[in-house]
Length: 94
Ligand SMILES: [Zn+2]
Ligand SMILES: [Zn+2]
Image (cartoon, rainbow, N blue to C red; front, side, top):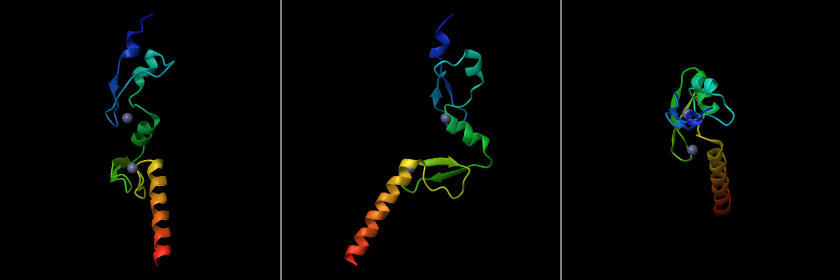
């Protein structure tokens, strides 16, 4: 048994990030993997994709959902915190 293949990486078919076999994954199984994460495989399996800009951090992200405005959940939270702070300021000032 050689451990060498566990050090191998290949580029994700979706985002291009290099990734290696997961813990406990067999070599044969890893060979069929094309994506670095379930998020990437999920994106690929969806229909037409859109390249959108996150309304919070400005990062580009791919989505199949035209209504999506944020690249990740942390950005949604951050945006709402900013929005609430803004509303409080407006209520106070005006
Ligand atoms: Zn990826
Ligand atoms: Zn973001």
